[in-house]
Each structure stands twice: as structure tokens, then as C-alpha cells.
Image (cartoon, helix red, strand yellow):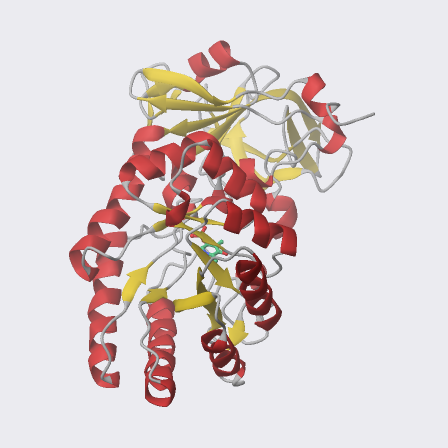
Length: 432
Ligand SMILES: *Cc1c(COP(=O)(O)O)cnc(C)c1O
């Protein structure tokens, strides 16, 4: 199986975090997101322990909460000692409502409105990650109006193509995010930030992309960033306190995806960074990382129920489930791979090739194509889609007025509702 928290019992039923998926459906209804709290905590600890060990005590991982934002996840990552990165006022609100210490948050995004900036300063968000000149000026102006000094990092693009697909490649010079080092824009806005009275520049940020399996891209990015940091020290005497390397380590969606040893990767990145710092004759800044996907993805699965099986001989077969693009738009958006299983028929041979599709009025409403399921698959069977803990709930919509799924958290033999299922009243709540 693609993750160690998956197994099969003697009745051929899929177990997730040791729990019977069929029983979870009977208890909470269908469809469902299920998340394994133990696995989330384990993923957090790998980053926390490795960063402490290889970078020292002041280097912390931040949970990139856009991967999955709801109150309980902020409580869990906080208990584990992580900070968080937030990308909107809505995420700030959610973190705050959960009691998350906002001084440990970093506020991202390439277009923060004046309203967002005011809200974030009022909430005492620890750091802004400023994307561009207008934003640096707006943060300085609003901090001045409020008589506070706001800590910021500046987001830079080191000019790295992370060899992943275009939609999640963000470290390149022509990215909509950040300011490029090679064009001189990075230096120009660093000077602007240093000249402002109501902000304190604490360092720099870059994020090279997502679903990355190879530390080469971090190492290349880090070398370029440290080169820039050394340059700023030489030219302006500016000493960088923090270097935030972003997120992006990949997870296993299918058996084909490699297993990635995060601790070994962090060790390698740390060793290389120390060498670069020596070469550039600077002290290594505190290093931050922002894992999102690799904290929550494999801690989540989605359970559905089959409604119909359509066989079109010589053409194609369809298995329709009671969910789809509203709860998981990633195949529609990027043709993302997923492992799809018949959770109640794990001992049967899978020789029926089909597309697993949702129930929306939209032919792009597909969860996965070229799936192999048992040929006995029929109405009422449970389908499990694995590795859905990241970018599923957080990207969910109400297309076709379909209520969002609940998130059921399991922890050993305990289970609880972390997010309730939306009701019809919720759907029409704002209609006048
Ligand atoms: C999306 C994002 C992350 C998290 O990326 P993952 O691939 O989920 O680890 C981290 N930092 C920034 C700035 C991001 O935009």
C-alpha cells in the first residue's frame, strides 16, 4: 500500500489508521473525508525533529495551511510546535478562532488588499511575506497609521524550474509570485523595504514549487538565495535573520511515486547550506520551511458510495460516485493522479477498467481515468480515494449546490467530527 497507515482485514475491507472504512461510512454517512490524527502528528514531528537536529533550535517548520484549513488542524500543528503560513484573511480568522498563536504565522499571497493588511495587523500576525513594491509600501503606510512596526520577509524568485508541471511551478523568473533576483527587482525592493520606518525586514522567502521529490531544487534555490543575502550584506550591511525556503516536498499518490525520506533530505539541505554560508562568508540565517501537502496529504482519504456502473462495450466504462469535483477538483484542474480502491472488495481481482466520475452536470467531473476495480463493482459499494488530505477540502466548492463533506478525524480507536457536513440551510445561508 502507498502509506503505512493503510491495511486490509480478513474480510477484504480497507482499514485506514487501523479503522474499518465500511464502519466509518455506516456511522457518519457517505461521502466522507477521513483524517488520521496520528499520521498528521507523525508528519509534523519529522519536520520539527529534523529541523531542530540539523539546523538548530530556532529553525521551525510552518504548516502551509492552504493545504487544508480548518480549526482542528491549527490546534494539532500548534500542539506539535509548528508555526503556520496563511494566505488570506479567512485563514487568519480560522487560525485565530482555533486559538493559534498568530505571532507564529506568516501571511503570504501576491495581492493583499488594504483591508487584509489592516485585518492582519489588528490580529497581530507575526510576519508578512511581502510580494512586491506596492505591497511593501502599503504595509508600511498602514503600520504607520496604526502606530506599529510590522515584521516582514520579502518573497523572491530564485529562477528555478522545479521540473514539475507548470501550474505549480512558482520559483521561475516569470512567475506571478515574488520578485526576481536576476532582473535586479529583488535588490531594488530590498532597498525600498530597508528605507521604510514602520516595517522591519527580517529576511527573505522563496517557494520553488510543489510535489517535488528531489532536494536538488532546494539546494539550487538556497545557493542563489544565500548568494543574494551575501550581496545585500556587502552592499548595504544588511544582515538577514531568516531564510524561508517554502514548501513543496512530494507525497505518494500512486505506487509509482517515490517514497521520500524527509529527514535525510533536510539533513542534506542543512549540510549544503552550511557549506554555502561558509563560501559566501555569512552566518547561516534561521531556516524556515513551509510543508503543506507532506503534512496532511497521506493523513487523509475520501470515502464514497457507488451509484451506478455504466458499461459501454468496446468503448468505456463508468463508475459514478456520490461526490466528485466539488470535493476533489484536482483531476479536473491538473489531471492529478490518485489511487482508487473498492474499499469493501480488497481481496477481489481488479480487472474492470473504468473512469471513476462524480455526479455533477459537467463532463470534466472526473476523479480518475484508467482505474482498475473488481468487475463485481455495483451500486452500494464503497470507493476509497487515497492521499486526499491536502488540497481537497481546501479547494472544495458547492457546485450544483452539493453540500461540502464533513471531516472525520480518527485517532487510534477514537473518532470525532472535526468539520460538520454542510446542511441545505448552510448552502442557502446568505441568499436573500
Ligand atoms: C503552497 C505553498 C506552500 C506549501 O506547498 P506544499 O507543496 O503543499 O508543501 C508553501 N509555501 C508557499 C508560499 C506556498 O504557496
